[in-house]
Image (cartoon, rainbow, N blue to C red; front, side, top):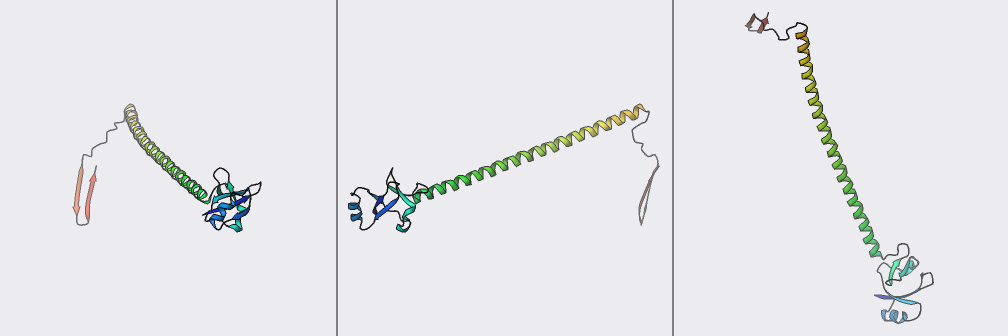
Length: 159
């Protein structure tokens, strides 16, 4: 539906001709009046919140310079961007946690390998030190081993 709007020099609405549409069309031919498409959210009682955008003669909110549909699309776009940014951040956090976890596992493996290598070197050095001190590092095999089985259990002794 078309309505005629009259604006003052500050582009504030000072007059509205809404019905019938043919009357609005005639009214718009008078200087100072503009024919626009009505917006379902436009209210005469709140016309002070509205103006007519010069570029396309659409009713827009003064606060945003946008139609309610444009505001809704802008809001949806903003929310979608925020959600995508949140997803991207979550994805980045997940990648960072994965990288740190891999590094921790690698560090643990490296540490275990280093411990194993150091333990082997200490054992080798101990054997060499024992040999240098005249100690035979080879464990002695018991020469006399006896075992006794009883109803209470087995007894094993070695000399």
